[in-house]
Length: 399
Image 1 (cartoon, rainbow, N blue to C red):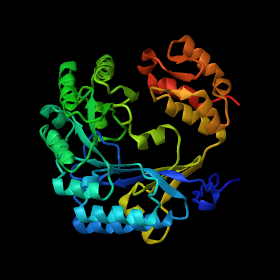
Image 2: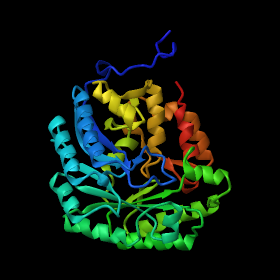
Image 3: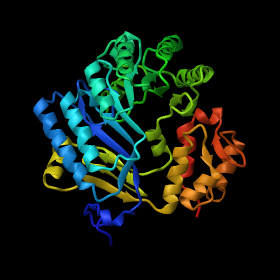
Image 4: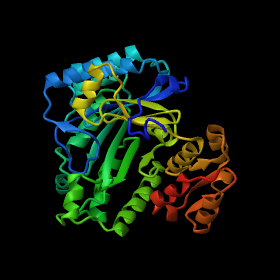
């Protein structure tokens, strides 16, 4: 009987992990000005500068705990929370500290998420000088009433102002996040927000349908009948309208929710969708290293206590079998417009997708949910409408 079967949590032994290089680094900054009621990411509000200073001290100590791994990031992503809430000098200290602890020699993308209401020219200039080359702004909507519904605390005009500041700080790689299917939103209102985002001419746009994650305040309000979610037919209409509009201006979808001019795709997120390895720092952050995955303790105090004690804060540790990895990779790659490439999949997993997914491929092709050719397979427009259900079919490959 294993320790896990006995009810004893498994601990992470770095000696059990392959010595191959790890190309991704994610850093979770949990601080927020306000907790938006649709957000399912771990975040906390009302933090002092002293607490943030201590957080950076412990973040760098956590980085020390992973130095025995071959973390050699090609991509870095600072998410949250609101990373741009960190005081300027603390953010500078965090970036410099990570550079001193990990090998940045192959770094080719460094993204920081920013709230349009919290950026300044001085802050953006510091990020650019520190090696950050990509900013992602959470606009969500350009309609004040929709921002209020989402409990976002910025004005629509903050977004173009922030993009202009970023340009003045010499950023060219920019993303704007939008949300559609907001309660009360119609296609005309969504189109107006989309057009305002297009007018900013950023090379990347992310457009997500609003989700009601369990235990979030917005999910509770929906359950109590305090708000009316968008009809599924309207949400699908918004999705296809977005894909058509952005394809026409040279920003086609490369993933279900992400659009970019050629060469401006988010390399860090492509690392996730292609099943690569990454280490994540900070409370609640999830890591995946060559088939073993874990998350950090999802509470700031517990995470702090682990780091202070010199312990890695990893919990929920799981090692996937080769077939499980193959199934998850297929599920992830089906989100990509390019879909799954048979040869690349075989090289990465040692499995022939045409064999282990034979039943799924035949059934879903007959239903016109996927299209298959000699190179691989991908979702059709019909399959896109039920993408999650189609992708889940690949989680149980045959021996």
